[in-house]
Amino acid sequence: MTSPPAETQNGPTPLLVIDVAGLTLRLLAVMPHLQGVAASGFSAELGTVLPAVTCSAQSTFLTGLTPAEHGIVGNGWYLRDIGEVNLWRQHNRLVGGEKVWETARRTNPGYRVANVCWWYAMGATTDVTITPRPVYHADGRKSPDAYIRPPELHDELVSKLGAFPLFTYWGPTAGMASSRWIVGAARHVLPQHDLTLVYVPHLDYDLQRFGPDDPRSINAARELDAVLAPLLDDATRLGVTIVVLSEYGITNVDQPVDVNRMLRREGLLEVHTNTSGELLDPWTSRAFAVADHQLAHVYVQDVADVPRVRVLLEALPGVDEVLDAEGQARYGLDHERSGELVAIAQKQAWFTYYYWLDDALAPDFARGVEIHKKPGYDPAELFFDPDDRFVKLRAARNLAKKKVGLRYAMDVVPLDPSCVRGSHGRLPESAADGPVLLCSDPAAARGSIAATDVRDLLLQLAGLKQPVGLSHPAAV
Image (cartoon, rainbow, N blue to C red; front, side):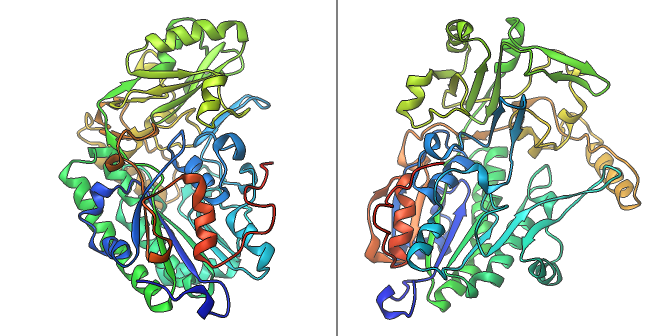
C-alpha cells in the first residue's frame, strides 16, 4: 500500500487519514486489512492527551497543540460566561491554533481538503465538510441528516447512499450502518482531494457496551475492518498514502462514580425543579462536575471552597487523582475552560453525570438520547433499558408516531449505569491498551509518536515543507 514518493508527483502526496475510534494493537490482531497498511509501511505507538477523548485528541492531531493551547479540554465544558454546560458542539472556531491544512496552504495555496465526520467540522476552512447534523423540526421532531458542504454534494451523497443514518451513529441502535455510510462518502470525495480526513466510530460502541475483551467487541473489530477494505483499496489504487490512527484505547470498567451526587449530598450542588424534573443549577451551585468518561472537570464558584472540594474528591471511591491548576499544567490541560479541579478516575472506574438522588425526580431527558441537554457524557445512551421488558416495542411504537408526524418521547435509556463495561479518558498504562498509528509509507517509520507530532508527520508524508517560524503556531 506504499504511495509514490512526493518528488515523483506534480503536487503534494495525497493523504487519507482514518480515525478509528478505540483501535489498539490488541484489536489490530483481528483486522487483516488494517494490518496490511502496517505491513507495507509501519505501525507505531501513538501518544495521546489528557483527557484521552475524541474532541481533545483530534484537535491535537490537527494543530500540534495541547488542550491547554487549543482549548478543547474535553468533549464539552462549562461556559462560565453564559452559565451553561455544553457538550458536543461542532463549530471549528472553538479550536485554537492553525490546522494542518491551513499550514499546508501557506506553501501550497490550492491544497484541497475533505473532512468526513472529524469533530469541529462546521465552519472549518476545508473544501468539503460532512458532519452529522439532525433536522430539528418546528413541532419538536428530530430527523436524521448531515451538514454537507458544498450544498450540491448533499444531494449527491443522499442519492448515492441514502440519508445519513443518524440513529445508528449514536444511541441504543448505534452500529455498522453509520460507519458504512461514512466510508461510502469518503470513497466519493477521496479522488478530488489532497487530504481526506475520515472518522469511523463503530468500533467504539461495542467496546463501551461490552468491554474490549468481549467476543462481541472482537467481532465488531472484524466487521469494521471489512467495511474499511474498499476505501483502503481505493487509496492504494489512487496512490494515496494511508494513515490510520486512534485517539484512545478503551479498557474494562465496572465502577460508575457518582461525583455530582456526592457534591449534592455535601450541600455544594444545587438543582431547580420544573415539570421535566430536577435540573442542575450551575448558576447557584458552589461546585459541580462535568463528567466526561474517566475525567471530570469540577467547577468551584468560590476559590475558598477549592480545598474542601479537593478533599471530598480525593476521598470518593473510584477517584485516582485530583488536579489543581498546577497539576493540570503538568498534563497540558491548564486552560480557562477547565474546572478549578480535574478528577481522574481509577482504571476500572468512570464518572456519571447523575445529580438527582431519586430516580423518580430525574429529568425527562435522562431516559432519552439527549447529548446536548445532559450536563455530562452518558454512555448508558448506548443501551435499551434492560429492566423494561417492553422497551423495544415502545421504541418501535414511538418510531411509528414519528413517521405519521406525532409527538413522541424516546424514553428507552436506563438510569442504572452498571451496564457500561468499557471507558477511556485516562492516559493508558500500557501500549497494548493505548492508541496506535499505522502508515503505508515505510520512509516515515518510527516506533512511537506523540499526539502533538501527528500534524508534522502529515506534512512530512505530504512532502510539504513547513513555513519558516510556524512549527508550532500560537493558539488563539
